[in-house]
Image (cartoon, rainbow, N blue to C red; front, side, top):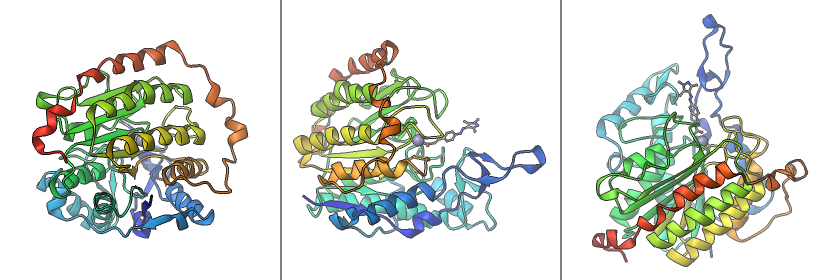
Length: 381
Ligand code: 9RB
Ligand code: ZN
């Protein structure tokens, strides 16, 4: 078993600029300039930790390339791709992908293409059998980006571009996207809303971002009805709630769908120290959730599980969550253990509360509408 790893220094050069957390800085209004919350630090520290602890040596390093316009327009409109290029060509900062919260730095068009292309390369290596599974530590993130709008720090929807590539070029007909970022994977859901060949499942903090998005009743449209699942977990949900959601919703849905490929929108911002959400996961939670997903991929699709980095803004805890994820993905361990384990020890035992259980039970009821037969026409292998 071989695990692939995509990283590139250019990912750290995506410049989100001077900001006040996630607000545009505005000294005239007393909004103090600082760094943007989606900055290179947490991702750089993930890469450094897996290098320093030796895990990098266990991975097959795969060189990313820039996604072509033709590859991007399988998902995005040509006008949107051009809009990102135009914003990126501006000098002096100030570009935005659409919602006012998605900075496009000078040159970010090429970096965003390198992020989407990194996912394409990983999926290709998995389809060819060069790797079993893999992880792309990319910036900018992707899961909020829709066909024609950037949102929530996301420019191109890296996972969606990879899913379409897998279907169009690699003979992988049915693709499941699991999204455990703390925020709703609205872009991915919208892109595949009417398409039963791509199942999207998002576990997230209810109503966190985007506002009023990711509710249980959003289940896909038209032919895709039933092929979008949402588990909007209440703030304060932790290890027990997320594990229950994996067992009650994610795993049964994957079993019924029988994907040829599982993609993971791998956000670490549901960890207890994240500034942009109020969930309570620990490195041990990510380890356990990953173990379950690796098991599903082994059972269902020759182990093909490809993860794209999404959120995760705690520079001091994200690296340990990512390390736990990668140890499970590769089936190895390192000498590094979660240095905050003593601090978070009680968090994994926090009570599993009725209002959390109800949300999961409601989503679980929708699982039985899924069947692989609906997509057999596309020629599953
Ligand atoms: C809105 C604001 C946000 C809030 C959270 C994210 C997280 C993204 C992520 C992005 C943008 C503000 C809607 C401020 O980590 N995704 O995985 N923007 N929030 N003002 N308004 C009106
Ligand atoms: Zn997020």
